[in-house]
Image (tube, rainbow over all chains, first blue to last red; front, side):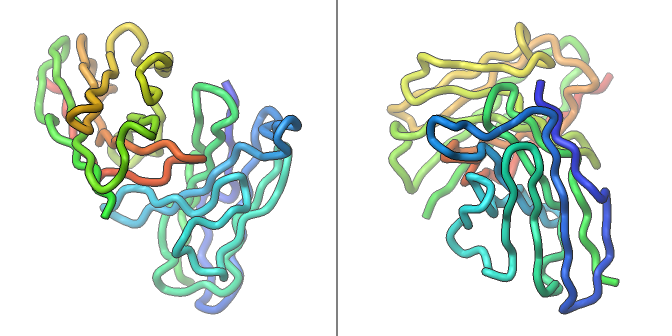
Length: 113
Length: 116
């Protein structure tokens, strides 16, 4: 199974400051035949289901603000919130869908400092 | 509006069975593969099963293989999860999720509690 490891487990950032979440996969999730990274990011607010933020590592889902970005390739990926807003307080998960079992990272909790 | 609504959760004794349903609307159901994902209380997300558009391809996580069965009814725009031989560690909120790249739409979830 591909193990997804996120860091940090939690972070507290001041409003308007940058938040960076890292995700490392135990195996490459880049498929050279289609030049895509099979990596998604989700946001889960308290008491709600997850919400897809990015797929193919960096393709923003409709409605996701452009202060949130996804990047990376191969085994190392990053979710960046360039200017943290109160509504960004949530758990964030990365997920690989390169091969089954599709696996999630353990989650990163983002809070306001 | 895309909607996914899970039902069928509840309290069940260890070794018991339960059938979850996920009714969908607002999109062409027979054009999408679907998944079940669960989340134990206070824990992270665990993908547990996938079913392709025509149900010809089905996958399970090792943790549920042989105990859970996924199915779909394209005429009813629904997927199902038959769960048998339930264990305490199956206690979780169970979500159905549409497969797109990633899982782009999720239901609100249904809580399954396995306890005596």
